Image (cartoon, rainbow, N blue to C red):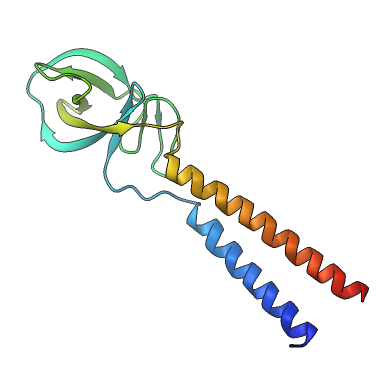
Length: 147
């Protein structure tokens, strides 16, 4: 294969890779509405709660595009209150204020470092692969120009 053809193929591969990698991490798509409280993620259901007990916290950060640290939500704005539910341990479920009513939110697991661990690992892999690919392309092109 000629040098120009190889170079064009590498440039095309790099451009396509760049577009795919950058668009895949530019926004987050949520499977369900959730809130984070006390280091745990709770899926907010369409089920309403009749009997709440005490206020236990509130949403401290909101985004529908990215994960954030703290009492984060992808659905509810900052200041939305969390409550314990009468007769239900908070490690099972909590209530989230939804206007004049309260929706049940069930615990689905630990919330890790503001970014779900799989997403964090994928982002790291993308950055490393992009850097290695870019460096390899630069070295290849520089060597071809010298010879």
